[in-house]
Image (tube, rainbow, N blue to C red; front, side, top):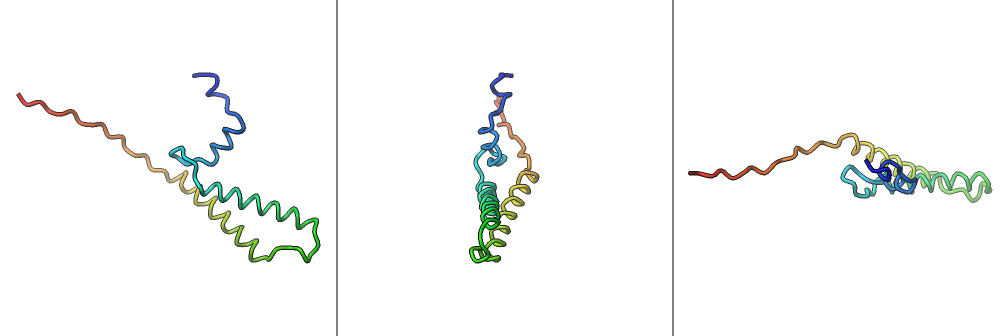
Length: 96
């Protein structure tokens, strides 16, 4: 095994988090990450701001639900991946 394939950089690890079982980037973890990021930023900003500037509770709850659904759907997809049976092409029969 090549030494370069053993060592994974932080950037490659982050990119790998957002990929599905086929190796392509999936939108569910991306949406969940952005939603979680917005929730964290909102909570940090609200801890330093006045009561008048807080967002509506229903808006925060909606982002939280979307984030939870994105994370849950991605987790379900990762664990329910069905292995596809590899089919080998049959060799043509030669009649004599």
